[in-house]
Image 1 (cartoon, rainbow, N blue to C red):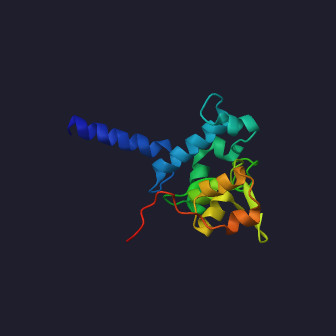
Image 2: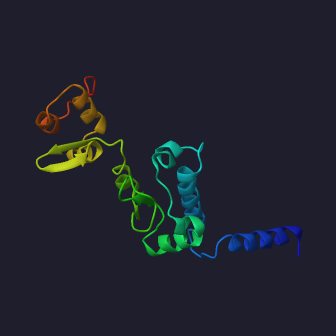
Image 3: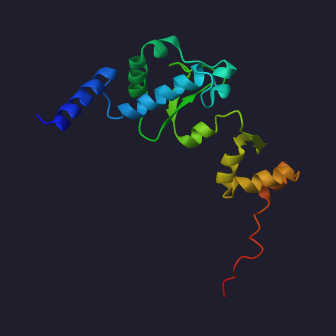
Length: 167
């Protein structure tokens, strides 16, 4: 056996021992888990103030035994491209409060979002912009300039002043 083969086998054995969990996306889930724990329990890490600094933590079951998190993730819809989401933005990371969603859905569940209510519906600025076929920048500028909600949502977007005109 060559030295490279020996190193490869040792590496595979070490990888298998790190968790008992077997899943095709094991590395990504380990990254999700590590970042979740760090932002909640390690002061000085990036984004700690927004999570652990606000009192948000990872439940003892997941913190004590990472394999239980991995098994929960695999049985609750984890797939590539999805992110972990807390249903209650002020709640902890635990099986009852978490699910996996797309980035768009996850971004709509942040404290920074601004909501607009119009025609009996309450949505984020980004959702309204997508629905109306315009940029969220346009809606933000209209809010800054003090437009009424009705005018903001119904006024068509002007084309740029110097846009090329077709012959």
